[in-house]
Length: 155
Image: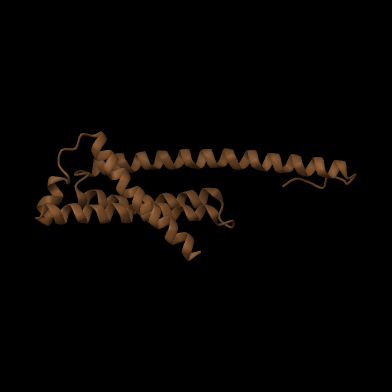
């Protein structure tokens, strides 16, 4: 399990850095870091390195959190809620510290986008699992009918 966590966290770190770079490229960001972060740190190189490490760690947390979906004992809604909290709770101080958001309203809007994304993830996974369960129930019924056994119920 530790190996899975480390693999996902490593991939998440790289994805965090890549997504941060992509967002900067798509928004025509001319400064490598926000002026707020630059003022806090004082050195451009140190600010860039700190942002790189922090967005990587944020990506690692979010990606490692996807392992919650592999825990059979957790209902899908609970796994989604826990994963959502794992992603939103670190985002708030990170966004404020790095200067991505300067007002509470901005943080709430960005957190709202994340909540919508998690609801869509939950909806897609729910539909997928529901379809799989229907297929398994049909396969079970077909199997029992072929072997002359009574259908004792479904999954």
